[in-house]
Image 1 (cartoon, rainbow, N blue to C red):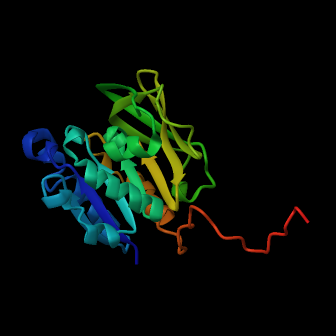
Image 2 (image 1 turned 120 degrees about the horizontal axis):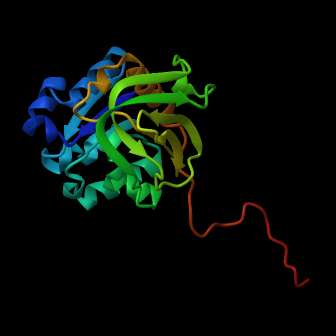
Length: 242
């Protein structure tokens, strides 16, 4: 069984009535519910818990961590970010959702600003599958269509993805690399664009299918991380001076 932790800053749900209507128990609980239905062992964590809910014990037991944040990226403690980064390098999967493109952990792992264009105008979004053989796109048709979403537009300041899975088109004319995979150390990372807090995106069954597939894909590979630094030779090195 895959051990999953869904992290959410959980601020909009406490202050915005529209968000409360869409996600009355929080975005994290909505995501946790459909992952549990898929047979995963799921815990949740939020920003205002001690250590943001990401204690050493929680992180050590987490196979895949999902991250949603928006208005309080700056409040995430750098020490926790470093611990999450180390766990990813050691093999924990990380799924970065929507506005978490600007989270400390994603920017740390990408090494770029991760900035983009955006607009809230009820754009229709069509998320095209551009890598139909990938496990994350399994069970998805040629595209996913969302009646209303926040627009994200290029240029998206990220490193070139290891794999590009989805490209979004928006009603206003923009396009966006909306599904990207990366590998860092032993860990796998998936960035997935849709999920603005005022829209019911995480109630959409196709979006749920992508996220569920992504958790399966990002789970750790059973191997030890390579040993780095000064190394003794595996074979005898002959004296070249003789």
